[in-house]
Length: 358
Ligand SMILES: [Zn+2]
Image (cartoon, rainbow, N blue to C red; front, top):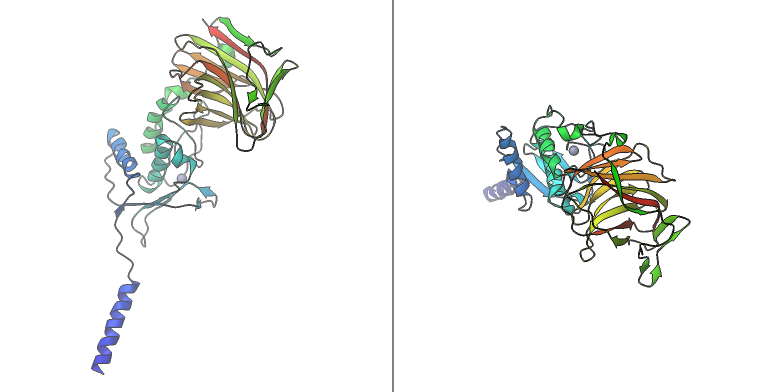
C-alpha cells in the first residue's frame, strides 16, 4: 500500500514535470543573425536611444503569414503574459534574406522595429519623391543597399528610431524633366535603321533579335533564361550625361532593361527599366535590385520612355518624363552598354540616344 502510494506519487511527479514547458532561454539568436541585433543596438546608441536587448528569440521558419493573412518573410511575436519573450521568425529561403547584407538588415531591422521598438503598425506613406517613408512598410522593398542608394540608409534608420524624422534633402531633390538647363551635345544615337553598331543577336547558334522597321527587337524564348546583348561605349563619369530610350514589352511578363557600365567577363552592369506590370527596376547585377517602384503612368502595351540623367553626384531617373528615382553615381565596372530581356519575354526599343550635358 505504502509502496503503491510512493509509486503513484513518483508518477504524479513525473507527469507534473512532463507538463512543465522547457525553461526558455530568453536570449537565443542564431550566429548569422546576431550581428544585425548588435548593429541595431549600435544604431540606437548613435541616435541617443539607450537600448540593451537581453531578451529576444530569433528562429528560422518557412511559409510565414503576415498579420493580414498574406505571405511574409519575417514575423514578430510581441511579448504577452503567456510568452513574455519577444520572438522573431525569419524565412531564410526568402529573396530578402539571400540577396545581400543590406536586404537582410532591412528585414531584421523591420522585425526589431515591431518587437523591440513597439512599432506595431506599418507605415506605407511616401516621401515627396515617391520613395517609401519608412522601413516599417508592409511590403519588402530594397530601400537602400550597398550601391546606388546607400546614401538613403541614414534617413531610414533615423526614421526607425524616431517616426517624426523630417524628410531628408534628397527626397526633395526632384528636378522636373523639362527644367534641365544644360546644353545637350550628342554623343551617341542609334535609331535602329540598320545594325551599324553590330548589336550581337547570336546566342549558341540561334538568333534572338533583329533590327527592322526602325526598331530593335530582342527576345528570350527560353524558360528561366534571360538574355543580354551589349556593345562598347565608354561613359565618362567625370562628365554629366543623359541616356534616353523608348522601350516596349511586346510579349511576356518579365523585365526589359537598359544596361550601362558593364563588363563582359563578369556580366556586371548597372541597369534600369520596366516590368510589364508597370514597375521601374534599377540596380547593379553584382548586388541585385536597388529599387522597385510602381509607375503611375505606365503603358503596358506601348512604348515607355526611360531617361537616366547623370548630373554631378546623382542619377535622376524619369519614366515617361516623370521623376521616378534618385541614385548616387558609382564608378562603372566597364564600358559596355546594352539591353536585357527576361525569360520568355520580347522587347522593342525605338531609339537609344546619349547626350553629354554641358
Ligand atoms: Zn511588419
